[in-house]
Length: 489
Image (cartoon, rainbow, N blue to C red; front, top):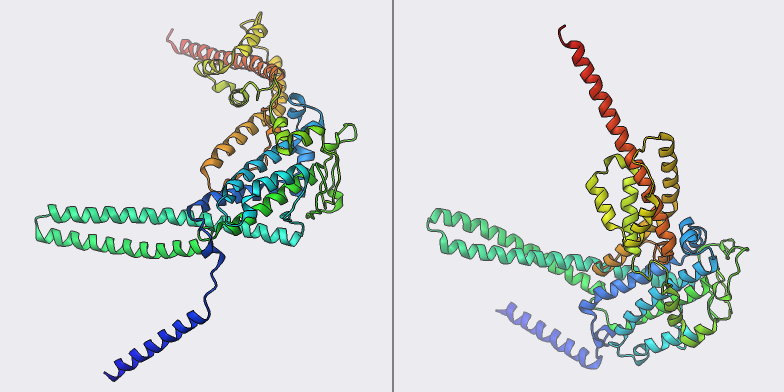
């Protein structure tokens, strides 16, 4: 009794003490408690962060040098799209800018949920920065260590939020399994009649239910912990500010790399000044496409009048619009890519191509290629038994596929990445650009190359069939001769 009285007094004293502290020193509310929590939008924001990280990585010195030396110099690009290096670099710059525009649109929508009026005006401020280079809130990060720290924070948020998504899915599965187990247990109570069988089933069901309840308890703890550490419980203001700084910094990087625009702050990168690259001397690059990389210093370059008139992003959207006479303008780029890949497989193994497969390939051809193919095959004889000519055709087809096939495969990869991006929280993207695909390819030149592939395939396909038929005929003749020798005289 005395012990109980003592415990009550201690409890009362502690309670009074905490109350006095609470009234004398009011607890400071954290930003996340003032602001509306991100909650389920954390998954969308993690996707936006992932895209920003990928954009920044794509603009690293190593990738910029690779773009200049490899992507822009692909043989198929020069044959079907353009051999003007400045124009190709302009396409690359426009695609980077358009990708950033889409990310910025997402940040603009999120900024409307902020309490800070400065953040709510993100869209206006960002558009002004893109068009004039004016950064009133100093959201562009210029310190390399600060940039690295922000990117690590983005990566941590993306990783934790992706893990939260997986753990929430696991919790949902466990809760669904528990509901099924409870439902099954209730059905057993109604249908079982033998006491012994009922007792055994009850023990099994209770053990399973208990095990699931235990797993659900710990899974909820894990989800709760991840919600605290990930984007889920963060406030909009702090996260949108982080996104705003990243968007401004990526745009500044794009302008510096491609020599676009107004004064851009120094953005130090990993490579030395020897990594700086420019368009080839034989080209005549326009001022808006001086291509620079390495440690990048402030640059002041004249923008085109159209950029100043219609705005930075509007002018880049115009650049990305395919010209008449291209596969992109005809909406045939993806179809032609599939056609080229199917043809490539048949050329590699013509002996495995049946009549049905050949008919299916013919059904894929648009009318323009069918007409061209018929014209090329007029007067071609039915015999295809010249091994020298077949070898020459194989070499010729190999050379054509050497520059045409990469564009077709890149087209499929580019399209699949965009489709997967809509379904995946953290898309696994490569650095394939639209200029490396068939999208900007000249339609007439592409169709001529495809027709040449089909003419060659027609010959080597018939050659393989004739050689196979000849081998079978000789085998049958030898077999019949052997039988005649074995007959009794």
